[in-house]
Length: 229
Ligand SMILES: Nc1ncnc2c1ncn2[C@@H]1O[C@H](COP(=O)(O)OP(=O)(O)OP(=O)(O)O)[C@@H](O)[C@H]1O
Image (cartoon, rainbow, N blue to C red):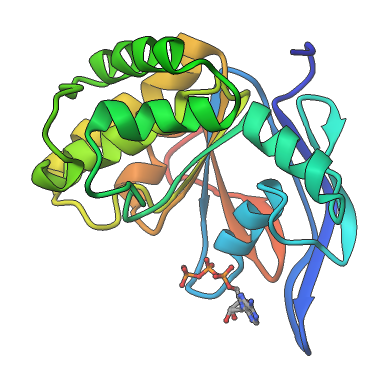
């Protein structure tokens, strides 16, 4: 780990056919801090996260994760950087339904080369931190909020410097949403990672240290009424 920001995005541009999605977007995600990204439907929020994950190649611009450039088009190097430095949580959790929480979380470590016993121990620690039993039940028997906390534990398996969450509470009721937010927004302070949360929900965005809005392909600081006076 270097001492610079968790992620730095400079001049990111992306278009699909004649649709300009990102138009010179800049973003710095400091360690131990959270950023919420809001914006209208189709404004490019998920595309931005896919670029940060190295899964979508921008037309122009640069992305650094923990000081290392994301190597678009070099599958091996890009995949390694992503595995080692970036964790991601999506709206539906994307867990393997037949496996237990422990198995779901440990698998992420084993795929990154961690021995099975070590991965299982670390999975149990992470699930304990997030308040979910590691158990032998399959994850599809857990509630939506528990499944999202299992997905967060899985995203933390490889000690990411950058944690990305795309609508992590989009399918949860308000009480469960708050529990997942409590767990998620505590992580930068506890672990020192940078956190980027894409959300439509103002209550979720309000939990972040910084709130940015994607407008016409650029990220602009959200002005919060009554603040700074
Ligand atoms: N693979 C693709 N091919 C063509 N167009 C795409 C592709 N992926 C996304 N788009 C388009 O790019 C634009 C931005 O999509 P994106 O999913 O990033 O928006 P979003 O802000 O996350 O939207 P939402 O809030 O509705 O999830 C949309 O107009 C979408 O239709």
